[in-house]
Image (cartoon, rainbow, N blue to C red):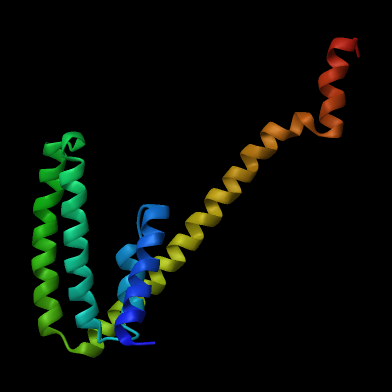
Length: 148
């Protein structure tokens, strides 16, 4: 498989995940593209891709954008983008690669912990709802009207 075809598959998979979950496009795309390109090239390509998709979404949903909140978020993001670009161009490639690895592992661990917490709380809520319908609970529910 050619490098371009593999990159298209990676981007397609990452955008599928982004469309399904609402986030994670760059989180998946950069590490996976870094397997076939150097990390700096992957970051630049993904940043450009995110800029295009973000601008497209902004134009499509411009009527529902809260402009004051957008301004409060957009200004710091430009500062962060500029700082990241300076660091990307000045840091040694090894540091960038290791930083990406540490960030990816930390983000993955955080997502796993959050998913486990959500599933545990969802399980508890389900048990609260299903508890009265279980065999013992059903007897308790029906024994009340029967006078027990």
